[in-house]
Image 1 (cartoon, helix red, strand yellow):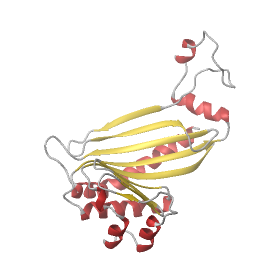
Image 2 (tube, rainbow, N blue to C red):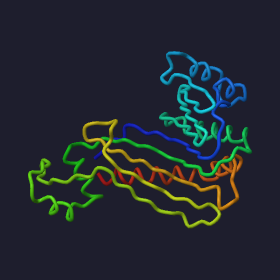
Image 3 (cartoon, rainbow, N blue to C red):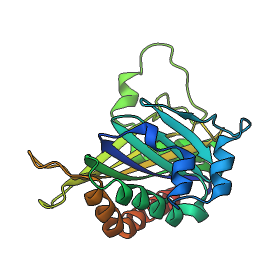
Image 4 (cartoon, rainbow, N blue to C red):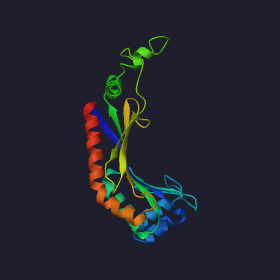
Length: 235
């Protein structure tokens, strides 16, 4: 039995960006965020101090977090009720800057949940990383034992599957690890749904990214939720 406690969704793009343009006032002026969100981002007591320069744009506007460098743009929220707002906001940014080069797009999620006990926490790791090989390796020496007598525990496990689609190649990468935000007995699941937009010498742009985001959002989010549900049921 496990309890899901923290969830975040992020849209990540790699390409060539101009951080200086993504100021909260500019976004509000273009109708992408309301004026009160722009004012929230510019307050000195905001959770993340506003920083907008040619090399970096970082701010938090209520439910929305923005971090942009010349090579990467990350838009995220930890408010589950704002996931569609996040999607629409990012599509709006891309559509306003359609010729900006965008090479790849990620629809990502981070989930943290708490297991009911230390024993359940260890059992979860043992299920996904069986210790039959590792335990004999550490039979010699004075290694600290877990409460169940085993010595080895899982720290990070990453699995990856590639999409068989020549028109939109990419992959799904899932990382499972102990949570650093929920302790004790917390588990972290990170899911990266990667879509490769630039292929060979044909560079994609923000208009391509906006279209891909619209077309792939529902499927990517459904897959993420199914994966997390299956993992929770495995505890």
